[in-house]
Image (cartoon, rainbow, N blue to C red; front, side, top):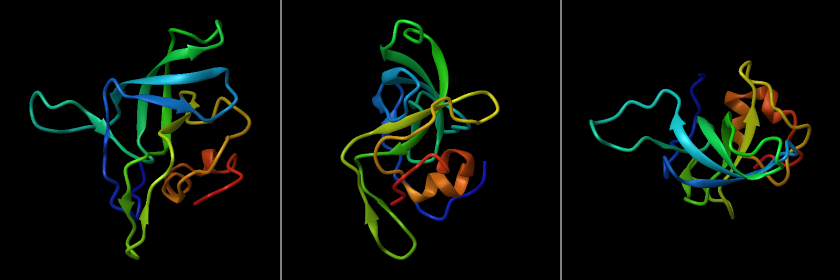
Length: 132
């Protein structure tokens, strides 16, 4: 994964529920694991904006429910700091489903997307209509 410029506070841990911000058929996602997490023993893995995670689809269409997919976090409620001193916080925690290659499963993203996601995953950034 490419490094991002901001220092993102990682507040979403395993078991947290997110809104699915794309039109892939999923509504609510639950975090199962965080890709690349390294931490102290017995500490729950946690993630923030622009992290890749594995999720279980908690609510959605019957075709996609109870399946495990990969996703990228595009918004988080907890504020984080950018290098210019600006602090960014969103109204909800949201993610976008991706396939094994890293391409998004949906064709559009509802709501704004963090600039850090576009830096790290430009393919997902193309779907955004608002980048904050």
